[in-house]
Amino acid sequence: MFAKPIQDIYPNPPAGLDPHELDEARVPKHVAVIMDGNGRWAKKRALNRLRGHKAGIEAVRETIRAASDSGVRFLTIYSFSTENWKRPDEEVEGLMELFAKTMLAEVDGLHEEHVRVKTIGDMSRLPADTREAFEEAWEKTRNNDGMTLVVAVNYGSRQEILHAVERIASQAASDGAVPAITEEAFERGLYTADIPDPELLIRTSGEMRVSNFLLWQLAYTEFYCTDVLWPDFDRYEFLRALLSYQQRDRRFGAV
Image 1 (cartoon, rainbow, N blue to C red):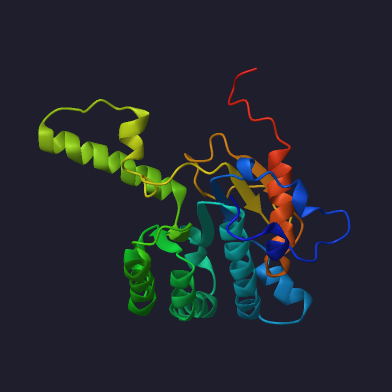
Image 2: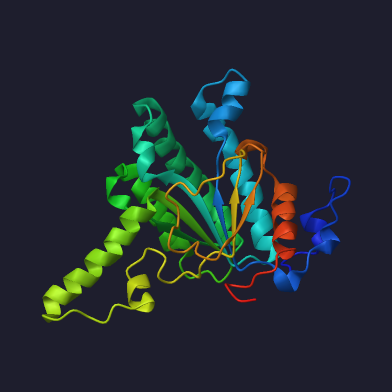
C-alpha cells in the first residue's frame, strides 16, 4: 500500500501521465538506478562537472521520496564506481566531499521517514570523512523498518564477484575441502547478500549499458532507459518507469 495517498505523491502530473494507473500491488520491491548525465547537464549550461553533480542531489531526493511513498522496499543508487577513480582528481575530491556533506545533511530526514541506509562496495579506499559519514548514517538508521536506501559507492560488480569467489576459496582453505558451490553459497559472498535482486533498473541520459553494475543480480531485471539527464529526473519520470515496468510480461525464461 502506498505510504501516502497517490495524489500527494504525484499531485500535478504532466498531460498524458495518470498516477492512478499505477497498480500498488505490482510496484517492484527493488529498484536500482544508474544516475547518468550530470556532466552533460553541466556542460549544456557552461558549468563545471561538479556543479552537475550538485544539481543531481535534488533528483536523488525526489527519487527517494517517490520510491518510498510508492511502496518500493529497496532503492539502490549507483553513486561512484571503481572506474570513476580515473576521473580528474578535482572532480573525485569534490565528489567525495559532496557525498560526506550530503549524507550528513540528509540522514536526519531519512531517519524521520524510517529509511534505512546501507552501502555496498569497497569502503576502505574512501577518504575518512566520507567513510565516517556513511557509517554514521548506517548506525543511525540501521533499525528503521521503512525502505532501504542502498548507496553503491566505490562499487564494481566484477570486484564484487571476485570477492565472493575469494570468500569460497578462503572457506575451502580453512576447512580443507571445497564446499558445495551453489548459487545460494555464492550469493552469500556478494555485497547484496541480504538484499533481493532488482526487478527494475532505471538508467538516465540515453545510455544503454550496465557499466559494471550488479551483473549477477540483474539476470532477470527489467530495464527502463530514458534520455532525461539525471539532474532533470523527478518523481514523474520515476512514475513513468514504474508504469512501464507494470506493462511488462515477466516470464523468467518460461512461456
